[in-house]
Structure formats: structure tokens, C-alpha cells
Image (tube, rainbow, N blue to C red; front, side, top):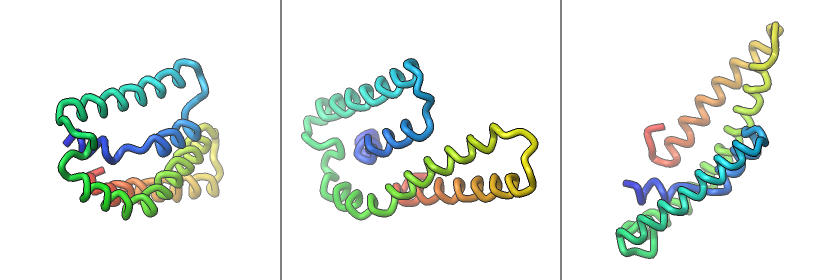
Length: 127
């Protein structure tokens, strides 16, 4: 299970979320770096325990094929999702929103829910 989850992780997607959504404070930048370092350590530990050279283990062909098919569809949804979150956060900071802004917020929330479902379906996870 851990190998499957690790095989689905993508540093470039995580980096985009960081760039779009994380305040550029030393503390948060350090936290992001620490999480990515822990991911690398976890991958190395799985490889050591399984004595394999691929995190996905014996399912390498299936995971590779699935990843090749999945990325062109799921990656753009991830990018879109980060943008939706950024826009929602900006709207949430506004006081006394107009009817137009409230409607925009509702559209963004619905689009975010669809993007979450899309990524979950594409990754074959529950969400």
C-alpha cells in the first residue's frame, strides 16, 4: 500500500501547490522541504525493505502504464485545483461581498469539489 501511494506522488505537483498557496515564510518553506525530505527517506526505506529498485515493487509494469495514461489528465486538474484554491482564499478575505462575488465564490466551490473528485478518480483513490 505504501509503495502504491509513493508511486503516485509527484514533486512537481507538490511544488506547484507550494508556489500557489503557501505563504513564503521561512517556517513554511522549511516545513515543505522537510515533508519532501521525509518523502525521499520513506521511498528509500521502502526500497531497502522490499529489496527492490522500484517503489511500486512487483507491480512496476502496471503502475508505470497506469501513470503514463493518468498524468496527462490528472496533472492539469491539479494545476487548476491550486488556482481554484488561490482564488477562493482571496475571496474569503473580502468583507461585505457583492452578490456577484458571492455567486463567483459558489462557482469556485463547486469547481473545487469537481476537481477533487476528478483527481481522486484519476488516481483511483477515494478522495
